[in-house]
Length: 502
Image (tube, rainbow, N blue to C red; front, side, top):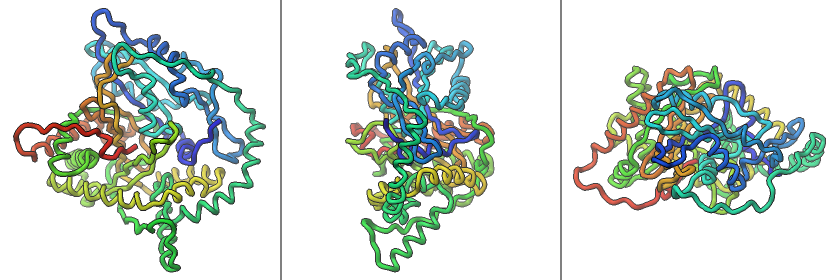
C-alpha cells in the first residue's frame, strides 16, 4: 500500500457536488491509411491490457482510514476491470471541433466511481475527416501535470510499428485490507501525529502562504505574515530567508462567480512552438513568460470586448513542479506561485516584459522557501483536522470571492511525434478543471512543434472558451508583429529548459 501525501489528500477532500478535481488529455489521431487498422475501443482496450503494468498507478484504488484518522491509501486493485475503464463515445458523422469539445466537457465533468481506480479512457469517433480522439481522464489525487503525461508513455510509441513491451515482473493486485485493519492502522499512527505537527509547524508556518495547499486557503496569508514579523522581532532566521511576501489584490471580474454545477465547457487551439520561441529569443525571456504574457493579452482583449476589463492587473496562479529526477512517479509534487498578470497594459511588448519581471520575482520567492518547510507542511495538521479544514476553506472561497482570476499551467510534452496503436497523434490537448474561487484555467502542452492549449470554464460562466482560444491566437500574432523581418532563427533547445510548470 502507498499512502497519499497531504496535497494528494487535499485533491480529494475539497471535492463536492459542484467541484471535481479531474483532468484529461485529448489525443487527436490522424485518419488510418489504406490497410491500416482503425483505433477502436477494442484495439485500445487490448493495448492497455498488454501495457497496464508499465503504469502501476492506474492499477490502484483508494482505501480510506475510518473517521479520517489518517490520509487514505492506494492499494492494488485485484479485480481491475478494463472493460469498465476503456470506453467508446460516438459523435454524429461528421462532427467538428465544437461538437468534440462539447463531448469532452461532458465526459470530464462526470464524477469517478471512487471504489475503482480513478481513470478512464474514451475512444471518440465520428469526427470530420475520419479522425479519432482518445480522451485520457485522470483524477488530480494521484497525478499532477507532469506525472499525468508520464502515464501516457503506456499508450505512446515513437513509431507506428510499436515497441517490445517487457513482461510484468509480478502479478498486479493484492487483497484490500478490511475496514477494521485500516482502523487499527489509523489508531496506531495517532501518537505520532502531534509530534509531526509540532515539528512541521515550526518549519512551515512562516512559509504557508507560499506552499500548496495552504497557498490558496483563506486566512493563511495573515497567519504567515504575523509569524514572519514575530520571527524578525526575536531575530530568528530559520533555515532559509524569511519571505516578505507580496500583497496581491485580486480584482473582481465578470468571471468571479461561485460554482453552481460540476459541468464544464472546454475549447482548444494550437499555435506554432517556433513562433513562441522566436518571441522568447528576441526579447531574452523564457518560453513560459511568452505563454503567460500571450494569455494576458488574450484575456485583456476578451474583457475589453465585454466592457469588463478592470483597471488593476488580474492575478494568475501558476503551478510549479518540484519533482526531482529521482522522485517516484505519480502523485502531486507541485507548488504554486501567485503572479500579477499585466492585463492593464495595452502595449504587447511592455506586457511581455512586465510578465517576465513578475514571474522572475515570483520564482525568486519560490526558491527562498526551504525544503524543510515543504516537508514540514505535510505534518502540520493532523489528517482529520486537515480534511475538515480543507472542506471549510472551499466553502469559504465561494463566499469571499476569487483567490486568483486565472490558472495558467505550462507542461512539456513529447518533442517528437508519437503514435497510439499505430495511428499518429496530430495534436495533444489538455483539459483542466475549474476550482471555487478561480475564474477559469488555461493549460498548455508542448507537443511536436506546437503549443496545444485547452481553456476550461464553468458551464454557466460568461466566458466563451472558444473566444478565449481565438483571442490567444491574436495575442501571439501581436507579439510576432514586434519581431524584425528576416529568416527565422534555428531553435534547437528543449522546452523543458525554460522551467516546466505542473
